[in-house]
Image (tube, rainbow, N blue to C red; front, side, top):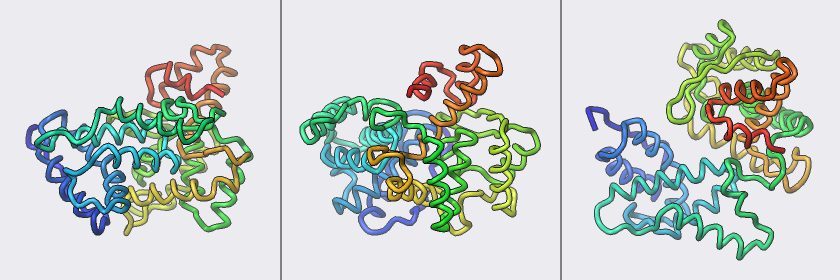
Length: 320
């Protein structure tokens, strides 16, 4: 385990959620499995789960987590528009936490929980397709990428509502293909370096660092606007000085979820921030293929830019 210790913050939690979070920290700080990075990642992923369980079930003890709580969270997260990877990564974090709690486990393995959830959805919704919760992105079976009209209407609505954080973060994800947490991690130093070098350096899943080329006028304009939001080197462009990062992220996610029917092309379009990565991948693939005349080279470059390094994953993003 080494000398690395998790740092505690209450993250603005109250009531049952705060109690559960304090208990979660107790178990996670003494965990002896995996690297410090994996322990911290799992700890961070548990925040939203603890909020939901605490607020919904008023659970007092983290040891009392059962399948029903996990299943309820999964249903809530998918209906909130979270991506499939986000949901199942959180479930994996709950499993990790469960292994740190002494005594008999109170819930099943992820595969069993997933099967139960799919069976429940099938019973409640005859038209439900299990692929919707197994793919990288939870969607409607249609192209999850935002169309040009959706992007324009969404940005305009955000501006009209004076949600400048939502408007700029939408454009940021579209222009640079960043994940939500990558967007909200950007500070004056990283953005300034991107404007100077032509590459935005960001840390993605698993701590992998990649350089995203600033190869469009939109990307540069968005970076310039984001840069103007900051005054000091480490000040984050999308997070107010008195705001926690995960709260700022959730606020934008909730804005999309609550208003997407106003700018989506059709009522069944479950637009999420993650869908902007699909848009970015598809546009970049078309651009590079036009320049090189080589579809394999286009796929390779897009995989690098998105931080996949596995072309089969990128192909999911290119599917219409």
